[in-house]
Image 1: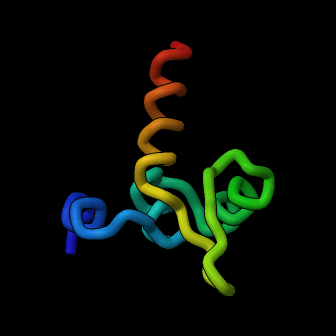
Image 2: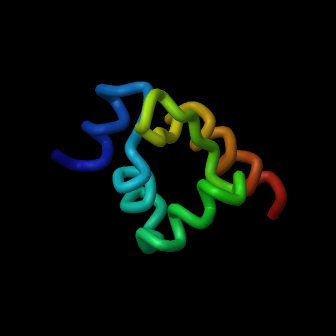
Image 3: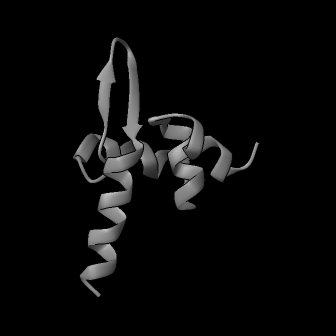
Amino acid sequence: MNAQAITNERVCLTIEEARRLLGIGRSQAYAAARSGELPTVRIGKRLLVPRIALERMLERAGDAR
């Protein structure tokens, strides 16, 4: 399954899926989630990245250039 198929199917991504889409390492992704740099929601024990929040974050980063 490619990244486009993942994002079209679900509202939230796992940290692993988000880090692959962003091209960052696992440790860096979890550090960004802990610091709030990567938007996350906790559902039970799962830490997820809302797709819309990730897209907005990337749009804001692009606008800042």
